[in-house]
Length: 218
Image 1: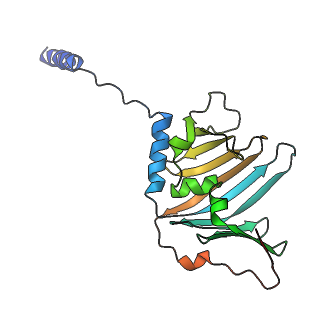
Image 2: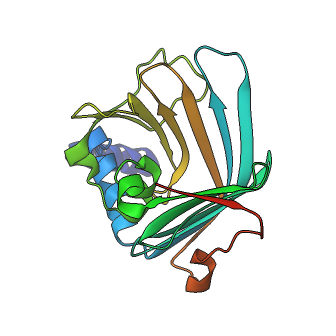
Image 3: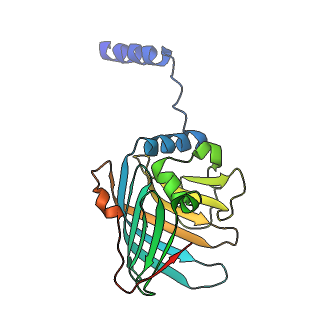
């Protein structure tokens, strides 16, 4: 029948066409490069965060949450609501760390702090992920719940970081970051309500502690 002949002809034409190669999945290096490019193009980053820290030698887990904002160049503020009020703030020159419970604020040169702060380097693109880290996909038997998008291992031994587990969303933004130190202790940050390139009032990077706060300068 004519219909059967047309179907046969259509199938023959279809099968004679070259099949294009399947799109290759991005490599760890390609994912890391895209992540780097996202933050290099970002002028400001704001989010809510939750944090948990577990120490290898202790079963106790410390929890915290709050808000954070980072703006180029060199401005940063983390406000902890829980477990008690803490404010970590960098005005580009000094890094101030206020602890309400202890009625104390520590002040150190910003450069000393920022050079060792992995999260800051991520969010402002001051580091170079491919230069500083070897990106790898996690092993199939990853031990700890949801598998991260990438694991990043420092190319040169870092005093505080053994490796990083990084979960990346479809905007090439970090939504979850786990820092593993050389003693097996874990610090995990989860980011929600993320806003990029929103106007930021520079006044929020100024902080005056309450009267009676002890100021410790290093």
